[in-house]
Amino acid sequence: MITGERMAAVDANAASLGVPRAQLMESSGNAIARVVREVAPDGGDVEIVAGRGNNGGDGFVAARFLAGDGGEGEAFNVETILLGRAERIGTEIARHNWDALVAGDADVREVTDSSTVSLPEADVIVDAMLGTGISGTLREPAATAAAAMAKSDATVVSVDVPSGFDAGGPERNANPVGADHVVTFHDEKPGLDALDAEVHVADIGIPAAAERFVGPGDLGLARPDGRTGRAYVVGGGPYTGAPALAAQAALRSGMELSFVAAPEVVADAIQGYAEDLIVQPYDGGRLTPAQVPDLVETAERYDDVVVLGPGLGSAEESLQASREFLESYAGPAVVDAEALPVVPDVDTDATLVCTPNRRELARMGGPEVDELRAGTDRTAETCAAIESFAADLDHVVLAKGADDVITDGERTRISRAGVPGMAVGGTGDLLAGITAGLLEHADPFEAACAAAYVNGRAGEVLAGRWGDGDGLGIAASDLLTEIPGVLWGEPDE
View 1 (spheres, one colour):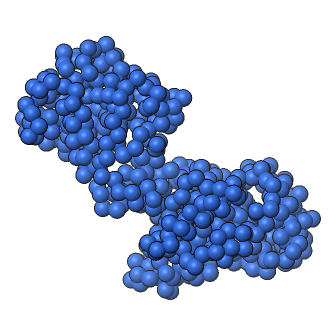
View 2 (cartoon, one colour):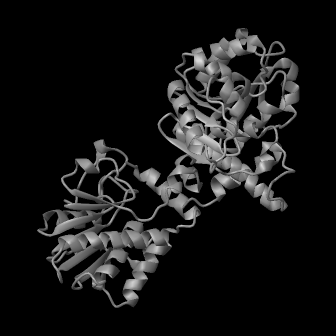
View 3 (cartoon, one colour):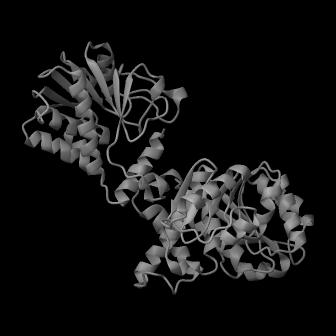
């Protein structure tokens, strides 16, 4: 089962793996044509009603397959109706397939308003108006076309989902077109099984890696659509660079403000790393339980996303303070570095994303792993062990390594982005800050997946710019300027 949003991400990931959308559209159109052949009489009349997006493009491809016999029987009488003007077709691949119909002298017509919508009698009507990206009340001329389909005696075959159906959840599904058959792609969409329609799941050639590995499509599930939110980094004491890097990365990932709560003895040093940071000092040389009530009150008053741990050190009173913070705090938080070992024993209402490296993972009571790298003999075993640990922990785990393993105990993905030079100190602090920036807007698991990709891809971009594919000269602070370009500048469609 896969939602429409997740399906769009998988499509984009497939393209990044070398399976372009044009190829997937060809497979989708062929799958539609196969179902139409099953339900229509040889030489029957087929009406394809198409929108201006990729759902319509699937219909255009199906029309091309159906108009020729393809060695599978007599050709059908096919008319393709485009709802809208051809020059306003929304995607290049859909436009290409419309142009192929026109160039092949296919029977096509454009409908520009509801008053000109008319569906002649047909044996089969293909609903290719709207896919998973648009749901709810239909607009004209799709509304009139949908009503005509529902009243027709023809067999209605919908493409991916019935137009107007909401693939986001079964409580919102609908079948406005009266679909008798649904040809859905790659995997079934939520709610289709509740419809009075036969559902055909078509394999269109999306590689399993498009779901297994994090890619550019995952950015669309977590990318901020505006600059909002505050990061609140609780860290510093023995170390000063770690909280500064995490706070700066949160800013680069879309946060409006980034605060660092730190001991007064290091506050000036942390402030000195970047004038963009707001440093809030507290008494003493390290975090202690005495500071916890004020820190929790501040974080909850401003609905902050907390990053707990960078640079705290391992003094017992700092660990106890971390425990008490998590026991009292009820908001979203990224837990990193020295604060990680306290998580398994804490009863908290907070929403946590934990970002351990393999040594920290073991110290948390998780599995001991030699390395985190996809493609090794033990990849499946390692992922299963981390997934089981996350399920018991009941928090998202982003296990850092040569490749990153991200799991919420049910879903597990691997991010392969990055270069060897990112083993340098500080890149994990960047990852914690990026995760916080995305956690403001996204589901914790999706935020963690996208953050791992952004962090690794920033290293790849920088290494490529410097002409050093391994990035062996990279310092963590160098990556800060690459984060926005990866998050907002790289295509995910």
